[in-house]
Length: 124
Image 1 (cartoon, one colour):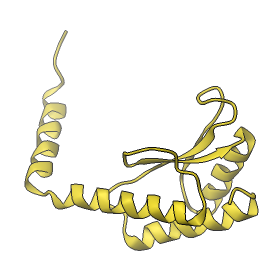
Image 2: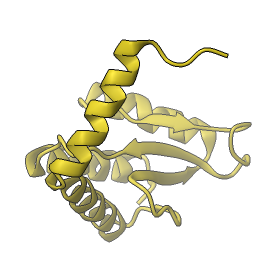
Image 3: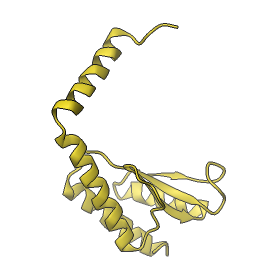
Image 4: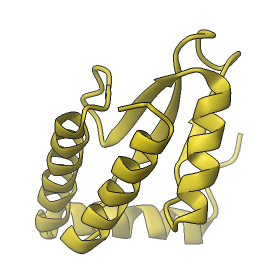
């Protein structure tokens, strides 16, 4: 079995170097994650038990999760549905993934769209 090509190995080493020398990126990731999860919960969404920057928004019905995802996309928010048979029939969800590059304005934009559509679709 061969190792990774030199360019891939170099990119991986550079990424590790950034993580070690610029810890503000990791801090921002977790700050964004905490804010987004807390705000979704305060709006009435079920975000499950995730302890990672991947936050599920549990919808229940697969059709409703697909509709929410499509309507979020139309509103400028990319969030994929995870539906049966990937999850139990009544546990469909929207998968959101946080990153350190998002600003407070970005997060508030997404939260506004989740609130608007969550109410329209009777999820919250």
